[in-house]
Image (cartoon, rainbow, N blue to C red):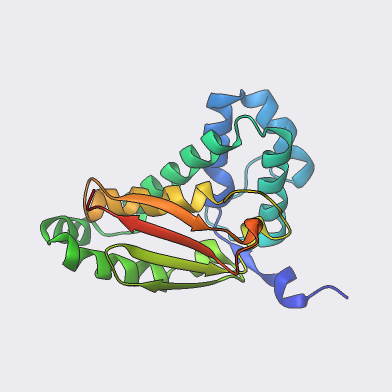
Length: 198
C-alpha cells in the first residue's frame, strides 16, 4: 500500500519551474515540453503552489535518463536560477545587505539557519541537517529528488547549485559547493560541503 505521507508530501515549484528556461536554452523548448507534458507540467505549474514530490522526482529522473548528456548542465543552471529566485523574492533586501557586510564566519551560520528553517520547500519528506564550518556541511537524508536512483557518482547538481548560489552571493564570493556523498551512489545521506577558503 502506498505511503500516505509521501503521497501528500510537497516540494517547492522551483524544482520544476527553473528547469524550464535551462532546458529551453540547452535542448530547445519543444524538447522540454515533450519531457514535461507526460508528467503534467505543460503548461508549467503555478509558481505559488507546492508540488507533489513524487511528480518532481519523476521529472528529474526522466531528465537524467532521457538527456543524460545535458542533464548536469541543466540541473546546475536550474539550481542557480532557484538561488536567484530566492534572493529576489524570499530574502529581504536589508537582510542580504547585512549578511554581505558581515565576516563570512558570522554570515555563514545565519544563512545556514535560514536554509534549515525553509528546507522543507526543497527537501520534501527528506530530512535536512547542517554542521557549522567552514566548510559548512548540509546533510540531506532520504532525498526525494533522487529517491530510487542508482549512480556511480553524486547526482544532486540542482541542490549543490542552489547552496553555492546563496553562499556565494551572501557569505563570500569564492564560496563553492560540492556534493561529497550521495544516496544514489550508496551513501546513507547526500552530503554537501560549502567552503570559501580556497
